[in-house]
Image (cartoon, rainbow, N blue to C red; front, side):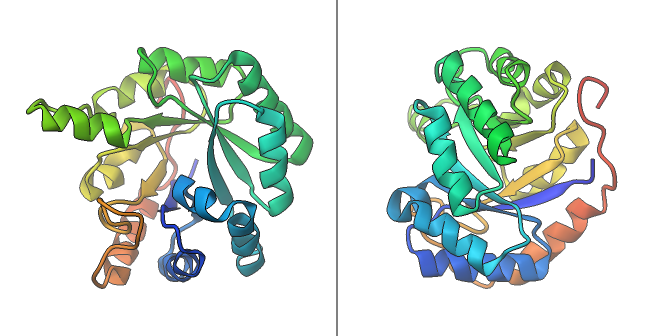
Length: 236
């Protein structure tokens, strides 16, 4: 598939999210993500506002669903989300319910393996249960806590090739990647490139990073899109 650039709107002010989204789409970003902080702060209103402003753009609602799978997905579908996120650590029935909601409402379902003892097995479970995408995700608190102990924190690239080889759906890698690493993920067979902290979102607070980021984002989008088609699955 052709690589996709997704911007994570991990802010808590709706107007800030809309302004950042406007800039991102202007320079070539493909998908918008209503990040978990934005959903916590504004709920379905945030997704509805993004859909009204950007009627043709895919919008990912990063719910991180753990229970009430069909019901949570329904709320976001009615608000205008094109994709929702369910966690691998949720009960299997919850994952199935989100997948069913995806079928019922015509939404993509992204399964997130954050916190799985075996990240590769978690990714495979999500794909086997019908998730159309896998988010290979090393968490914020996990990275910071391990680093605070003076140890090397895990990086999504550590197991990204193994995750890609274990599933037959598109993969995105999230958590602690530098901008250079994020841009390189299509080389690992992961065509969904997510941009957030530290380039777009401040790494220590839920707000847009300071400085002029528009030119940098444009260059990143050009580089990612230049990959052309990326093979997905075990043969990537």
